[in-house]
Length: 620
Image (tube, rainbow, N blue to C red; front, side, top):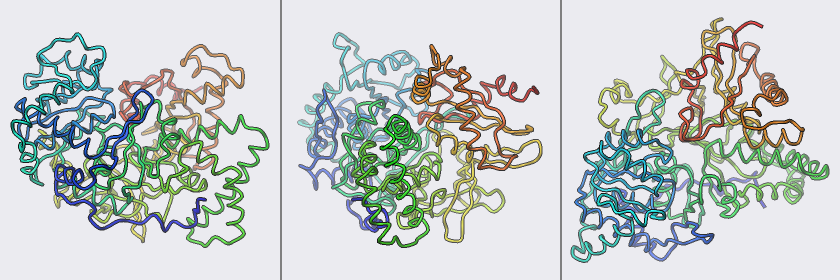
């Protein structure tokens, strides 16, 4: 049974569990030490296939040999254009083992974006997942003179393709086997020649305010940071984790691939982004890291399921979550939980809480990790009431991921925790900006020395762009992005993220952008949760024929208004949203309004929907 009043089992790990000061050194040490143990798992034709460390090593050695046979040299760049699959990891580790630079490209990027990223990074080898991604590469390859070869992971539908510049991954591996037979020590020698200070990976920012910038990370920074992660959210070889966020994003690259490489935990790849809820229940991870949108979706699913439950089931859940909430309150206050409340929790766990955890797929989870975007404190508290602590971490691409983190023994929803032991964090006295310094901080932006200089203070601290505060115990809190703070026409400073996070706690709202800079009052652009709002419409006989007609239905407007009214009650009058506009187009990661991690781009949304925004400020 989950004992949420005793979190002593979640301890930081300070010892070095795997030697190596570069990613290739770590990887090949892991292969030697863990050979027959399972590292990666991926579903193929309905069956989970295991990749042991030894099998992974063989594949990486063959791919690396194939790259060397093609003339790939140290400091050359290879890019990977693919969804999150095992082959992504194999290609990444092979490139790094050759002494090359590995760059990821979002699978949702358009051909023009693929061209820019390959051009800017100097890509000579491009790995693509399938025919869909290959089409993008072929469309722009004539404008990429440095691109020598395109390697395809999955050749289904391409059997009749005959192109001298395109090669299947299986063929590259065969080429590598031949090369390695003739040069048996070549891959090992290249891997050993990699120096800690060498450039290892490029991680491009989302480019919400201009062209994407390639953040450069060295092997030393990566190795240092993954060791540091174990002092925040320790794992070991017995842990079962999931890999489903984009691997070209810093969160999954560091927190998924490289961290599991270091700790040895098993890494399970989901079938596709749409099957995450089913795969979570199937895998039942022991440690689960995700972005707030995933946690919001799980909460929404439980909320909607309860509406269809019997009155007895609703009553059982209501009483049980009430018990969990009372214990969560005491745990968060640092107070002991008495025997009577513990006995009630045992009943609540058997009555409802254990079933809810199993429904989500977190029944084996020791703890959850959330990051990459702000999360509602109430949502963190809800998961704790269920019996699973949720630890919030904060960082950015430029800091190699997490720079602060909440300790399990001192959870404080709404805070991002103290500075991680491996870096320094401060608040700039003049601007309130959170700034970071440490070996985990990136080398700079590729080909953009001016942007790099702008990103650092005169005394070498990284400007994060986040505004925050720190309490007497050293716990930091994000108040907003510097560029997002709203100053109303009345001179009131408003941090829109607080209201937006409360709105996203609603099962009917996916995201929102609060507007009001130099305006008389606040308004909001709202993106509804299609699945849950459609279910609401069906249950309440609301007619609709499309996503657009759903957003225009008066009943749906009333539903969203009720959610906004609920949040408004938590804020002062000047901080309340007076009007809103529902986005009438169903957005996906391919749309320019969304980042690859499915967050609305504030500036772009404000520019694109300027007419709708102006209409909310017209007197009626």
